[in-house]
Amino acid sequence: MPDLSPPEGKDLLQVLWCPFDHPIMPGTLLFWRSAAAVTGILDAPPEPSAVQFGGYLPEPCVLEPERITEYPDHLELSEELREQLRQWSVPQAAGEDMDPDAYYDCALSNAPGWKVGGWPAWNSTDPGPQSCSECGTGMELLMTVATFEEGDDAGNSWSPHPHPGAGPYPGHRGYNATGVQIGSGYRQHLFVCPAEPEHPHIESMT
Figure (cartoon, rainbow, N blue to C red):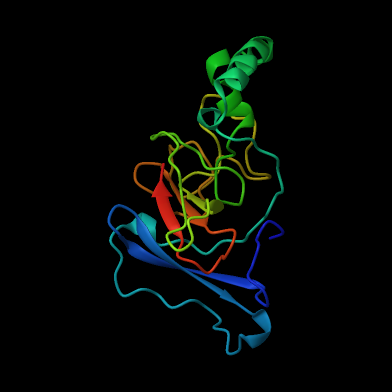
């Protein structure tokens, strides 16, 4: 993953996931390691003895990473830039039969699905400052854990290739090969300190 910025001498990130709410979403632990020092790799991950919800236990699946460009949520932009986007979006949205007020967020801003890096989505809350508890540095998005890989019916311009619409939740639009469900369709963001990635990370749900 080229967007990861590991600490000096580390080239492997291990994300441990607890399938219980802590307090409102699964808890995570991050371990930066050296791949050369990892021995005795298990053929299959150990099964947890208990999970709080079925959607908190990921299904084994094959990764098909895609590198894409996305932009910040409109709430993170200045009012002047938002106004420019509103004017620009009118003819763009008309060509795709979309609401111009929603065009930027649906077609250009946060890509849906699991991702490394990029920008957080603020679907249910306003943007909040995320500062490192150790040094006060502004935190950056490390990764997003999402319920659905594909956008909603508002016309999101990005969907995973080549299998959009599949998954273990019949009737739900959106690719869901992992089987993970955060709340009723939310995303879990993990933020890390860019000055020192091994400082405590922050979790948020939007």
